[in-house]
Length: 173
Image 1 (cartoon, rainbow, N blue to C red):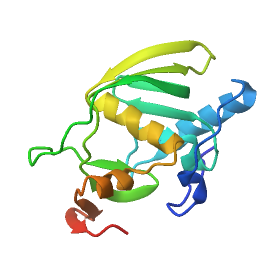
Image 2: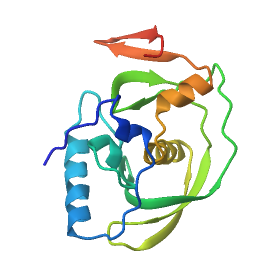
Image 3: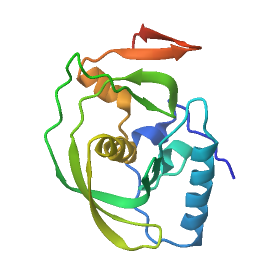
Image 4: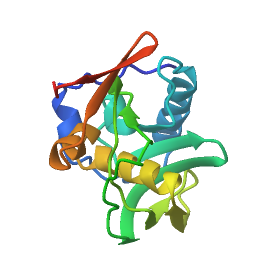
């Protein structure tokens, strides 16, 4: 079942999500629905989806980016490198399905190691480097009530809106 996205003004996006107590049939159904919802996204396409984005206050997210396909439950950061400083050479723009068509550059850590449960409830320790590390940080932010626009503000970075086939720099909404 395709789930409805939480609006950017929905308070659930600003709260710390609750830990998943049991990886049971309810959680399996939510994961399946989140996968279906993420795959159905095409304008814009998504590469990650956190439970709060679909109205569930749970520490759970999924990632589907090229070879990086994960279900991450109750993640805990074990180690993380110092965030990279933004430079004019940075061309990668971060966006969010909760705020579609808005993008901006964000200085993120290039390496992160986390502990988490997979969809079978098995404990995993995994390190992510480069763009996959950025994805994991973005999704963990959702579980902590942080949105990418918070980083834009903090880093005094530009925000762009994609309209049709043109990019326009905009003020934070």
